Amino acid sequence: MAKAPEHKDFSSEQQEAAEKEIIERSKRIDSYLSEFTIEYLADKMKGGEFVVPPYQREFTWEPYRKSRFIESVLMGLPIPFLFFWEMPNGKLEVVDGSQRLRTIEEWIHGDLQLGDLEELSSLSNSKFSDLLESRQRKIKNRSIRGIVLNEKADEQARFDMFERINTGSKAANKAEVRRGALGGPFLNLVIELAKLPRFAKLAPVPQKALNEREREELVTRFFAYGDGLQGYKDRPAVFLFDYARRMNEEFTNNPALVAEYRARFADMVAFIEQNSPNGFRKTKTSTTTPRVRFEALAIGTYLAIKDDPALKVNGPVDPVTSWVDSDGFSNVTTSDGANVLSKLRGRINFVKERLSGNAGNP
Image 1 (cartoon, rainbow, N blue to C red):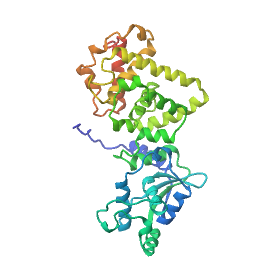
Image 2: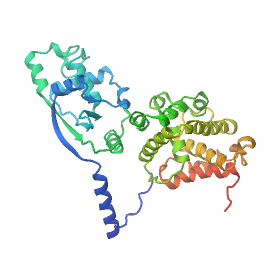
Image 3: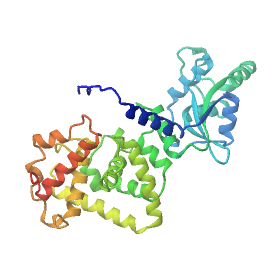
Image 4: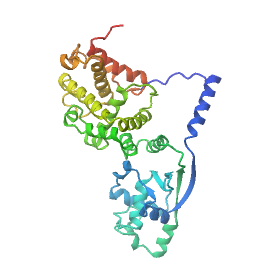
């Protein structure tokens, strides 16, 4: 376990800088608290007044979770806050809570049949319409609290909120959020390249990670980090979100970039295919692709080729096999503090320098 850095008292200048940063960041989040009845939520969902972003539409609770949630509603247990963003047209975009809202709509207005319930066994396999009318009214009148971000909250603010609310959750990860929130020509290219069979062979991922779009995450990091780390502050999610948004705009303004970036990725994949026996894996039989290892090999390769295109034909000055299993490479691709800028640059430059034959040179 990494040792915590020694704490040093803040200077007055640092305190002032911190206060300024807190105030500035807080300006992005302006919200109000509201109470919504279950009837209101179900009606608004049915009427399309609540907008579910694309990155949340693909994920639906399994029957067991739906039943368990409805059982909680029936028992009057506290329900977590819903989070919305007030869109310019007055509709509310669901920042967090789409599964709960869709389940409520399906139960009240749809044909949701509950499964086996643990606490309310008498209602197992029942529907909302099976309840007494008096109970139906009481349930519809119950309220769930929601927090609404006003329309000034930008995409990054909503992304930050969703990410923080879902810390530790795999319901929708960063690649999925970017995919839905920032659809455009750059993200379309990322999705295309992530599906390439050659890349899939070099960068295997478990089925669960594949479903969570891990390869799209890898492709995005390849382009973002390869284009430079200016502005990177040890927070990959924020850096990649800003990068993807900016590149969507650049690709829209200059469609020729699509072919240029596609070729960049193809050159890197071909080089790894020819020169790295295990691709991006640690061993030939590995079924996972560590991000730190991918970043080092993929981006280091791109930067080396960028400086010396002849490497595509001549191959690396120092063969990959001569250092890929070394203690030096293992040390720079450790996951401990992996997102710190110095370590990110360190692993990328380690590969670049060896491929170019500059390792150890001033």
